[in-house]
Length: 314
Image (cartoon, rainbow, N blue to C red; front, top):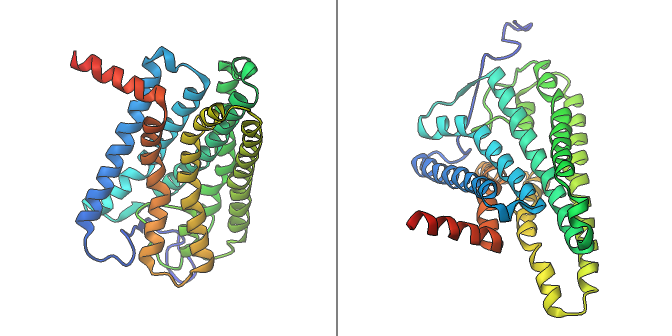
């Protein structure tokens, strides 16, 4: 379809960018991304396999951890095709419809991660504040319902995005600022009335990240109150230590998001390489760090890994 000036209403392809402002050193960047993908995919697959095989890990906490690992695999695999094509093969073009599909999956998995972290904070709240009812509150059916609820909420809220983008003409060029497709990036090259997209995008961010982070903070306020009420200092430390892995995972997810928002809001003159690097940190670091955090900080996971290693050696 052609616009009034004879230019395409929507481009057949869009052009991806490596890291804006970084003209050299793409070979090293490609190597770094390959290492990140390997750690993320192998680490999360290992967690899933371990939880499935070890009966001692068939508990609510590790069911939620499996959800997190599965979601992190989704985040990694949704960016992998275009990132590797851009940095390893210098293939920088992606079909318009393929770009919309990738945008949908990247945002869906990101919002699902926020919901899973909220569910995990509820798990820690019940385990510490009401331990006697832990097994009866977090039954398998309720855990499954929570997982399906997170998936449904993310899918429904993100489903309109590809259609909202598809209706817009693109007349500001077709060069995106990342090696993958994101909704804000597409809005920069779209013309026409983008108010609906921007308002709905803000609503979705507040409805997911805003609400989830508020409830995570509330959970930890209640957990802290319950922990401080424990008389024994040793028991207090033990109770709080069970939350450390989750706290680290929450920080690994939300700190990059907050940093990216602050840079966009208060440091608009930042070099393009800063914006590019921080956006990459937001998508690539949590899936890579989460398996490491839980392997290092969770005794049962460490024990399971050692058990598997011992079996393979014998």
